[in-house]
Length: 477
Image (cartoon, rainbow, N blue to C red; front, side):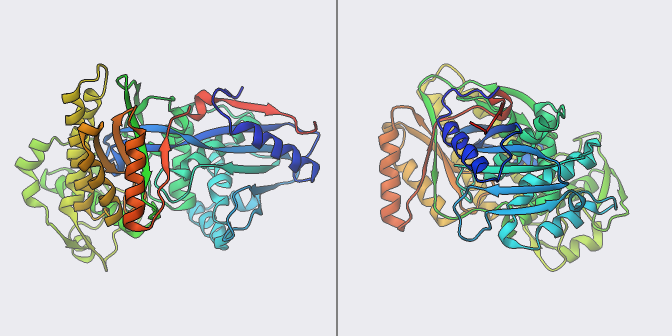
């Protein structure tokens, strides 16, 4: 049953579903399964997730609803209620196109879904069928009608994509009686993102959308998805997100290059440590026998890294030079481009230090709230923000928001700020006292005056999909 507490956004969607049934988009005599999943505010951790770091994520108030109704035809028909003139509002995909038996099936399906840029959004939802078939052996004798509604703003770095993937996967699994626990669902949704959509993200977004708890920070060790706790925050402490107005994309070149560079750094460290390396049959991939760090940069301590490995890493290396010596990396979702230069040292350093920052931060914001603890926590956020910039994932607009927060400072009840998620725009997370909303609003106003951009303020929290549940409803009334 869907937990409707504080979900004021559900009744309007339910009314829209009944309207679509009257218009023949949905069948009036069959049940509809509705799931909800929130976006997330990346408080600490961010891009270090693919390197095994700890992360702290807040499920936000804004969320995505997906309704699924079984259809006797072997077709998945999708309708989006998003008002975007650049997108088609509906499309159909046959189950045959979503089920491919060849070894490179995911790349074939991805190419198929990319043939029309106006329908790229469909892959986030329809991709669930492909992943369920290939990963856990599900069979689908029927298709589905799917309706999507979201108030998670896209391109703002708050994971609108994961909210859609998780809500869709949850609703599809309920409609077809597929048993998946919350963590497995998140991992399957990551495969949709990586292998169907083609965005090389880590798993923290999907885990938060699935397993998050309102008003707490989901604490996750991304190895690959070790849920630790939903961390209570000290009383009186709050987080805001301030959108920079600069569109962010996980599939963007900068994010992909930084991720690739981090895996290049790990490959170089493995070589320096004398770990056994095997080439894979797939060009550009390698396997490393790593009992020491288990394949994750975040398992290196900063002191170990500084003592033994930092001095051996180049600040920048060309892809061709790297491939000539090391042949490939262990990353399954990116490849080294021989024509590109990579900032290996900064990209490798970031997750090692970020993992330590996140662990310390989690202790500082836990009850009780003390001024000196919050000041220190804020400094860790500023350090994280600066590290993003060294990796090449900053931008002037997010820097300006951070500067305004720092200028206001603890005397105004604000302690820290950092760029979030994949960087290069998107949203800035802010740590402060819960009674300082007016200060955040003033920063938003001053930022708008400086840049001409109107920032969206993210405030509040809501339950992840597992706690929200799924509702089975009729649309014939």
